[in-house]
Image 1 (cartoon, rainbow, N blue to C red):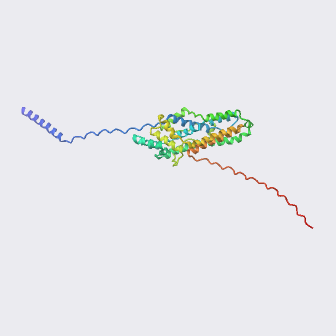
Image 2 (image 1 turned 90 degrees about the horizontal axis):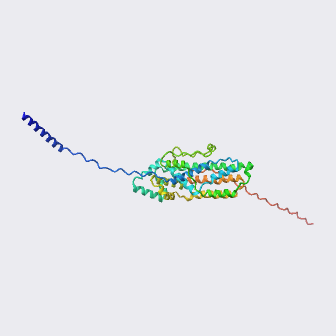
Image 3 (image 1 turned 135 degrees about the vertical axis):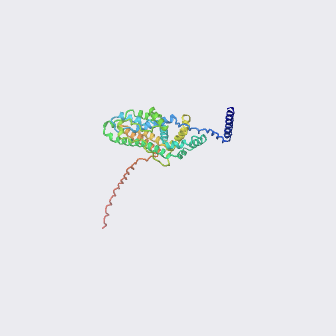
Length: 368
């Protein structure tokens, strides 16, 4: 019995030794792979609240002015419409149009994704930022810039066309309203209304808080922008649609400076470099003096028109031509949208030159 127990113990020991030897002969498991750090997340899209407010002020003015109707029943109604129309400062107005263009470009997912693909590498990101600041046209090179530009051109073009078309109707009303006796009466406080026009032309417009929130959300890739309802419900039936197209349209270059600068601001925002702390730099990128000349000329023509206008119907002409038509045309030209057809003026009749009658000579007397 004792022998059997010893034999079993010996066999167990041999098995343990054998198992140990076999285990030592096996290939050791590979070491765990080294931990790889995840790539840094790109900075969030940032667009200064001041830029969004300028975009809202521009959009709000275009909607209010474009909703001015062409039916006038008294002088007070004309003066109220004039107060709506004169209320923009040209420099801020143009800056607001560029800011609105940036918000529209940030609605293009292809463009934003293309820009943000360069945002994870800090060195590459800073290099692209520097190139955009040095030359805003660099922003045209990103994929999706053609459809982003299409959104800008089509939306601003529709806004400008709406104001222009409404202005044509108001200008025609300046002739139609002359049938009413009250329209031929002199405007009261002519100097006061001219002074008011100049004051409001030097006062920056205010943004609507609800519209600012909508634009801020849109700049972050949120809900697509839709046009706000016109202030005058009666104008809705004749209003030109302002919504951006459902499918983005590709607009090939070359682009107008306003479109290029709008794309540049959107690219900087997509790179996380357009926040409140970068506002002076962003405003420098947005500056575009050429288009401002058009708006300044519209204001000067308005002042001259109001200075000489006496009866009410002449104020209607000033409103339709120099506020609505001229401003709408400036927006159309700045966006690069197709301009409406303007028939050439009728040729001036050639002056009729009356020939002086030639005096007949008396017949010579016959000699004889």
